Length: 102
Image (cartoon, rainbow, N blue to C red; front, top):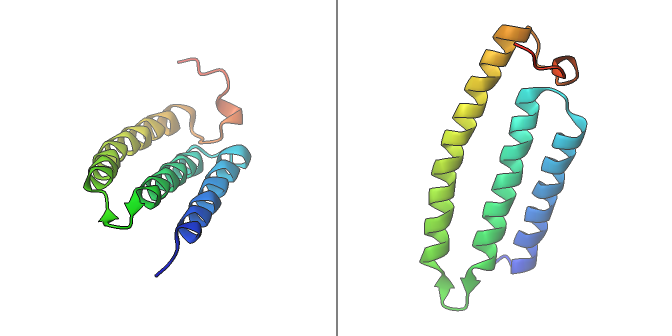
C-alpha cells in the first residue's frame, strides 16, 4: 500500500505545477487549467489527510465530491466568460487585455 507521504508529495507536486502555470502563462485558458490543477491538489491532500487506520472518512469524500461538482460549475462559467472575452478582444493574452474597457 502506498503511504501517506507519497500522496502528500504528489499533492505538493501538483500544487507547484499549478502555481507555475499561474505565474508563467498569460493565456486565459492555461490559467484556468492551472487553477483546476491547484484545486485537484487540494482535493488529493484533503483525501490523503482524512485516511485513518480504520479506513477513509466518508465526510471527507462527501466534501470532495461536492467541491468537484461546484468546481465544475465554476470552471464552466470561467470558460464561457473566456469565450466572451475572446469574442470582444480577439485574443486570450492577459497582457493585451489590461484595460478591460467595453
